[in-house]
Amino acid sequence: MAHRLQDRQHRLPVAQATVLTLPPASQAKDVRPSWSALESLLCGAFAGAIAKTVIAPLDRTKIIFQVSSKRFSAKEAFRVIYSTYIEGGLFSLWRGNSATMVRVMPYAAIQFCSHEQYKRLLGSSYGFQGKALPPFPRFLAGSLAGTTAAMLTYPLDMVRARMAVTAREMYSNIMHVFVRISQEEGVRTLYRGFTPTILGVIPYAGITFFTYETLKKLHSEKTKRSQPYPYERLAFGACAGLIGQSASYPLDVVRRRMQTAGVIGSSYSTILGTMREIVTHEGVIRGLYKGLSMNWVKGPVAVGISFTTFDIMHNLLLKLHQMGNFIH
Image (cartoon, rainbow, N blue to C red; front, side, top):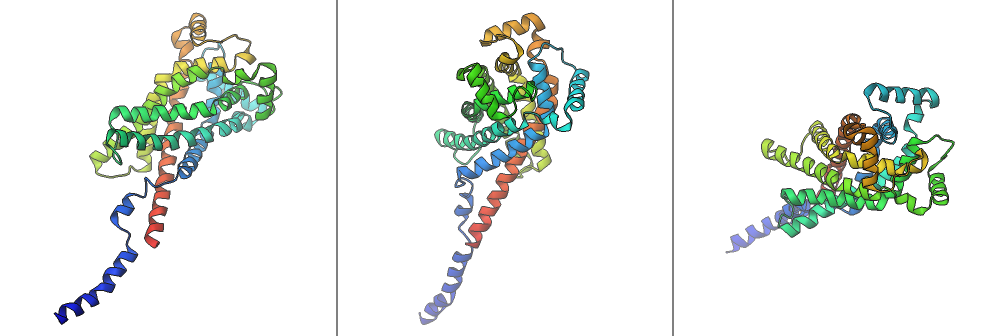
């Protein structure tokens, strides 16, 4: 009996030391859900800024074609880029990018952060907390995230479109666009094109997030690796962007026409009216899908970079959290 008591006393400090130095397994698993919304917002903002800056010259060129009646071709697109460079210098290719950053950083931050929250909410509703969601909730989480972000940042998208298609003399900076539109066209103009934007965002964001999450899930099941390599993330994001943007592209053209109607001398006021006028004068393919081939280049690149940057930063923060928990 005395021997057993002595043995317990000898082993007790060892057990205490183990508890102090190693956090419980359940605590390590719960690190991800305990992330603050601020961290998701920062990761999303950074991911959006990097992606949009990389493809800004192509994005600006696409908008120029979308809002005009010019026929699109790779040769014409290159000519626009070259003439812009000759007339305004290298940085003129990024004209409107400051407005893009002001819009994209909060948009991407809200979209990625709300997507995490919607996934968690839908996961608990459908009984898949902490697991991959079924197909429909996966699509729904993406659609809700995109809609939330678009609703909260839409006027910035309008400003960015105006700056992309006008000379510096017309609008000198972001605030000048807001002031001039409000004074000359009314505050409601800042929301012109809002309906086609939301109608386009629902399938675009839904399909994009759904495709990316599905590809990651299939990859994990096949390779037995919990996280894809960066180049694999880029490929998954590229596929997601290609499918999502192709599905919603006609509404993107309609949105741009309605946003820039005040500076290109047109009277686009309704979705159906704008579509009818585009199809009548330019045709279905050459009108509603104008610039889509350029989107097939820039879209997958942007979405791939965005998703990859967000995931890498998220995983980096997760490791820092785990290290902090281990130390404490």
